[in-house]
Structures are given as C-alpha cells and as structure tokens.
Amino acid sequence: MSDKHLSDVNTLRERARQHVENGAVTEGYNADREQVLRLLNESLATELVCVLRYKRHYFMANGLKASVAADEFLEHATQEAEHADKLAERIVQLGGEPEFNPDLLSKHSHAQYVAGNTLKEMVYEDLVAERIAIDSYREIIQYIGDKDPTTRRLFEEILAQEEEHADDMADILNDL
Image 1 (cartoon, rainbow, N blue to C red):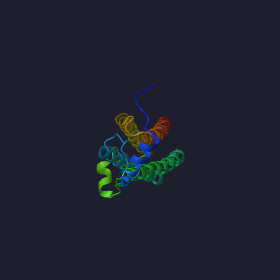
Image 2 (image 1 turned 90 degrees about the vertical axis):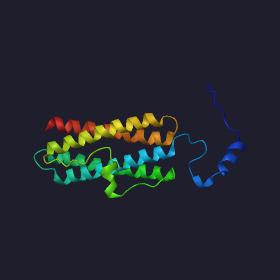
Image 3 (image 1 turned 180 degrees about the vertical axis):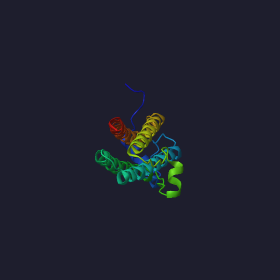
C-alpha cells in the first residue's frame, strides 16, 4: 500500500476551480514545466528535421534496391510527422508554444540533417539519426519519471516506433 493519500471529492472540486486558466496543468503537476517544454520543443525539432531528411531520401533514392528503401523512407517520414504533431499538441496542452521556425529547427534538433549522396549513405545517416532519437528519448523518459506521466507515455510511444525505424534501417543497410 502506498503512503500517498487520495483527496476527497470536495477538495478535488475546489482545486479544479483554482487557476483554471492553466488548462490541463493542475497543482498536482510535479515536473519542471519549462524544462519539459524545452525538451518537447527540442524533440519536435528533431522529428521535423527527420521528416525533411526522410523526404529527401525518398525522392533521391535510386539504384537496384532503391524501391524498398524509398518505401521505408516515405513511411518513416509520415510517422515522424505524426510524432511532431503529437509533440506540438502536448506543448500546447502544457501552456507552451510549439517552435516551427525553420531557422531554429536544425539548431534545436538532437539529430543532424545529413543528406547523404548514395543510398547506403542515406540509410546510414537515417540509422544514426534514429539511434540519436532512441538515446535522447530514453533519457527524457528517465528524467521525467513519474512527474508527468502523460508526457512520459508520449515519449514511450514515440521511442517504440523509433526503435522499429532503427531496426528497419539496420536491415536495409545490411542488405546494401
């Protein structure tokens, strides 16, 4: 049994009426909101940079094995865009503003935008970027812990898909 107590209904109702302007952020929010917003915006930048890199690779892929890789590039670009949307939505829920300024994206992104000239270079750079995202998101999950379960779950969902992306890129790289 936990040492934590549950609030009675009247206390819950009373607290809900305080600071209503904060929306989803209640007094029970235990994380450093500014730090979480910074991490979310950096992750948003990472996802958007990955969308752009994957889209470039989709259009630039050529060679005998290009169609398999191109299909993966396009699928991953779509999924990374979905991640970006979810991150932006969470930023707004926490009272922040999602940063979409193109001049700041590569500066704030954890992953670099490396174009790659050959199919093998493209796949390699995508795998490197996925590995960066995996480590980054795993650290963010550990940092957040139980202080913001909603944001933690969001990162856990994204992390699982990033691991799938890395596995896909590793398989393709091994075939090249």
